[in-house]
Structure formats: C-alpha cells, structure tokens
Amino acid sequence: MLGRALPCSVTVAGETCPIDTDWRIGVQMESLLLDDSVEEEQKSLLVLNLYFLDFFKRPGFYLSHLEESLKACYRFYQGVQPSREHGQSSKRVYDFEQDEGLLAAAFLADYGIDLTAPDLKLHWHRFLALFSGLREEDTISRIMSIRAADTGKMKGEERDWYTRMQRKYAIRQKEDPLQARVEEALLSGGDLSGIL
Image (cartoon, rainbow, N blue to C red; front, side):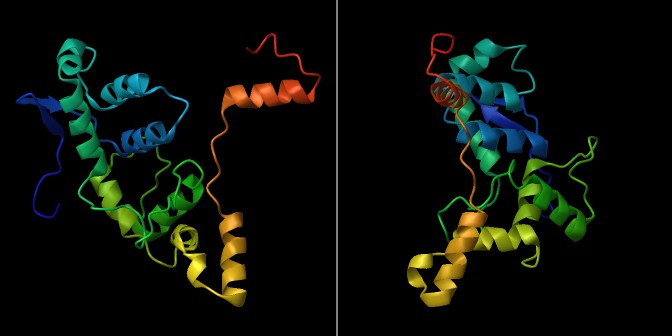
C-alpha cells in the first residue's frame, strides 16, 4: 500500500473493470456474505451489483464470466491483509453493524476520521489497514480481544471473568424475519395462515 496507488479496478476476462472502492461497500459486502437468509444465486448478483460500477451497462459480460467476476470481487474485498481478525483466533471477533458505534469512536479518536460523515471518501483497503491498526486501548480492540480469548486454556477467576465478558459482548445472531413472525404467531394463538 505504501508508495503505490490503491486499486480502483479489477481484471475480468482480460478486461479492466472499474469497481466501487468505498469502505461502505466493503462493509455491505461483509454483511451480505454473513447473511444466511440470502440465497447463493441472489448473493452473487448482489455482489456484482455492489462492486462493478458498470454492471447495469453490461450485465451479460459479468454473468458470462460469473466465477471470474466473483473471484475478482472477493480478492478485492479481502484486501491486502492476510487476516483482519485480531490475534490468531478463528472466531468472529467483530460485527460491523453491532460494533458500529465503537468502531466510529475508535476511528475518530485514533485517526480523526469521522466514519459517520456522509461525504467521507475512504478506500476499502485503507479502511482495512486502519482497522487493523487500531490501538489496543480502544474499547473495540479490547472487546475483540475478549471475544477471541480461548477460555479453555484458562482457570478459576480468569476463566469466569472471560466467560462472563464473552457472553456480555457476544456477537448477536441475526434474527430470521420469517422465524420471528412464526414464533410471534405461535405465542399469540398459533395462526400461521397469513405467514406460511
């Protein structure tokens, strides 16, 4: 990243294709990838639509090179970092939606960057580098460390404390809207006719 321009395009079938490099697109991509309620085929189309600036001008090109187009998007999304997770844990330690306030506070405190500013221009790869470089003292960094901690190697009070904190700061599961409506209907009389 130092001394070279950040990418603003990817190559698909030998063609240079312009992409949206905004950090918000990367955040949307991550949310999309983690959303189990979206079918894989629909996810693929949404990914192409998110990244390729000219997708609607030439959808046939991207769809005829679907696998290569998706791989190019995923490579860009992954950025230059081998891993964006703090420490060596394979656990998910952050959620952009759940942690947005803490992340915005850390970026403002550490870098003077206001992530809530609608006109903020920040390349996804720069965002990833800054995210990886947040200070350990930041609340978001401490919470990610707690989430990543392996309590199986701890004993006594330390294990109890980390277990409590992991429950407190756990990444909440996204609620399936259909499941929520079914549960609500069952709890209030059991009429599923308008739902299923």
